[in-house]
Image 1 (cartoon, one colour):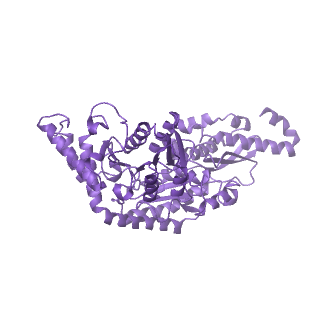
Image 2: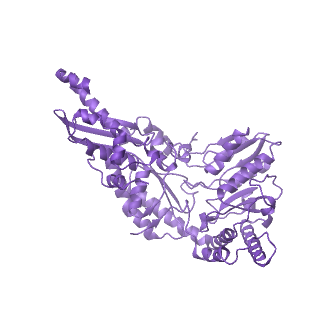
Length: 135
Length: 408
């Protein structure tokens, strides 16, 4: 039922854990629904230089989390915000239909982590406000 | 790679003796038992013999056995057939919150047709309290349907007691014995039931064949219309090979039951104890002692069941889970929720069901690999202690762990 790519990312997930002194953290999902993703990012300038995840969920939830950390590294914040849940699923050669909604939240976690980063920056570095607005 | 099949509650591997007994009826002995010539009479004779065998094992009369296409069909036939035939007398049905969907959805269907239903709760060990059944009976109650043992958590229900209550109040009583038939003693008179469903592929027989026992005198409409087969109670040409297979499998299972029951129970306990010893934050689902010989059901906190199954599959271990991902809906297992487990814990369920082909080596293989899988998934999980596993869930989880009170 899962593609080879999904099974690859599920079996050997990339970037498990939490980025030390993370610049932004995003957590989405709900344990009651069976899927929770926590994504942390390190930002240098306007680029995401590191991303790590921790996920409670099914095979699809783990694979999408792993894939999004790979997709996002080296991307600018603006580019990262354009990564959609659908794009993550496509990068994994698709997900079973019943997994598209409940377990495909990794991009949402990424966007939350970026929002968290921007919110922190706004508070401490007012000159970055413009960038936040553009994001 | 080694294959360890521990999903015997889902289906079992047909025994070679069963396949051998069936083969002639898939080939040269192809006659329709309703016809009159030689090869038809041969099929008829085999069918009659199979019916006699099944009836004898159940403690029933051959005329009380209706062969069906599955355990599900037997459940549908019993519930809808009795409900519609007795509607004038009563339009209320009592069942439990943990029934198989073949029963639950049949009752829900009847509700759509204007019947009323009561779903009695279970306690944290998945047990129905007969007093709850009795308290639910009204003068409009026509049928009670409570499963003999639960397919997910293995709890064996107090069927004899419920049967006495049903008898006292003049209400028909059906039990779904799909998980118990061939594994623990099932005698319709000792149990005191009016109707009983069973399925061949759960006791090393073929798929696509089941049976319904209906005590003589039970008023029941037929569920499938057409020809006059099964004494006019189930239309459709009989699956002769399937029925021969069912009877053969049941005969073998009954003959070996005492020995197998003890052997499989020992494997079960070895697996349960081994897991509890090696892994923390794990709960055994179901009753600790009143459980099916082969049933092992756990919830592992902080991780999700499908991830567990996929990892086990990569090591050749075939199991199942009641997580939402594997239940085919957005909700985790209705059985685990009815037992009071919080959703997040129910998502981490794993069911391993042992059978006649399992050995001690199989159990040890699972025990060797399962702790590492759980550890790996927990290292990946954002949760790791009760404190951060949702704020309300911890208290709820501890409640559910106590063998007291009733889940709703």
